[in-house]
Amino acid sequence: MKVLIMTLGTRGDVQPFIALAQGLLSAGNEVVLTAPQRFAGFAAGHGVSFAGVDDGPMRLMDDPAMAGAVIEGGARARLRQVRTMPAMFTQVLADCWAVASHGAGAGADVVVHNGQIIAGQHVAEKLGIPAVLALPIPMYVPTREFPWPAVAMPSWLPAAANRSTFLGMKAPAAIFGRVVDRWREDTLGLPRRRGRHDPLRRPDNGQAPVLHAFSPSVLPPPVDWPDSVHTTGYWFLPPSDEGLPPRVEDFLRAGDPPVFVGFGSMSGRDPARSTALVLEAARSAETRLVIGAGWGGLDSGVSGDDVLAVEDVDYLRLFPRVAAVVHHGGAGTAGAAFASGRPQVVCPFVADQPFWARLARSRGVAPAPQPQRHLTAAGLASAITTAATDSDMARAAQELGDRVRAEDGISAAVTVLEHIAAP
Image (tube, rainbow, N blue to C red; front, side):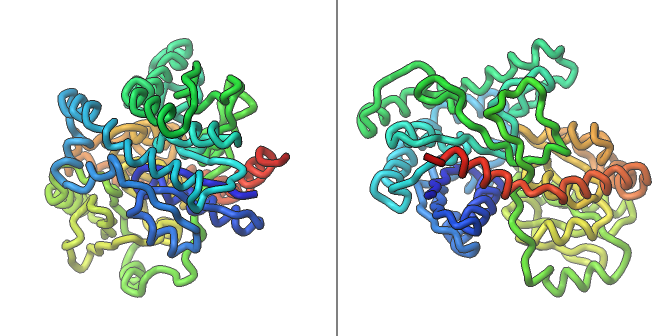
């Protein structure tokens, strides 16, 4: 079969799909990955055929001041985003159809999309092939067991109210509906129909298949999810054959296991201040420190006998060798931390990050979350000390990590896709 994968977002929204593409290729399938142009080299480096689309709203993250406003802004900043983002998708949508109709993705048997790219189910509808919603976050499928993870909902909501919070996923239709409808009519020649903006619904109003790329050991599938939802396990890239860089190996061997601190591309308004806070916390906790400085989250210029800054390092190789993993709660980083078997400290910014922070604590592998808005050096130092020294937490993290690593999420996902695409 030929699979057209379509995703939009940061590296964390692209990397799992590169891993899935590799799994599909290994099983003898043809794959094309469609993502923002900036990830062309990333895909090529992993042997995945790539068809780029316009970066669209990703440009908001290129300007540090704008990125900080996106991450930390209040209601006024959110309103500005709502007003400006629809126009940013015009070229994205056009590019998606060009790829699928006569570009590298032409002739696909199934479209796998992450919802954020918006075009996925519409392209599949025009081509008359299945669309599969795939993502590492349980954002779309309602359940009574937990509230919508896309924003920081109160964890004490009654079960009956949890399902209603997922109505938040109707916001994209309200924000982007006009742009998408115009594209559907003018470019795809598709009529308006009920449910056209809902990726959980097929054109015949049946339930569209969903692939959840996270571990059922971390988040067991709720009993009220339909059979069309498949929780496969994480889609990890295989560890690099080259291992960790020599300077990282040297640092790890030079003393006690350090603590890793990295916030991905979540820089906030002042990365330098965040870095200074992290350094102060590490000194107070009397721990050596590896700073994940890639993608602009923290300052890469720090150095010292007990501090090492790294960029683009293999988390699956590094995390098992540290005393604790301090991160922002992004789904991909959280998955690598769960798989590592090491305790965590989660310092969430926005979106689904508080959800993973609460989940890590509920699994006994992390102390209470340390939200970025209220983060202090003293609070972070206390949380690091707890994570690095609590024997019960270490045991829980190791047991959970063993279960996560025993899963093969990519093979499970490939099996589901081959069944869906079968004639």
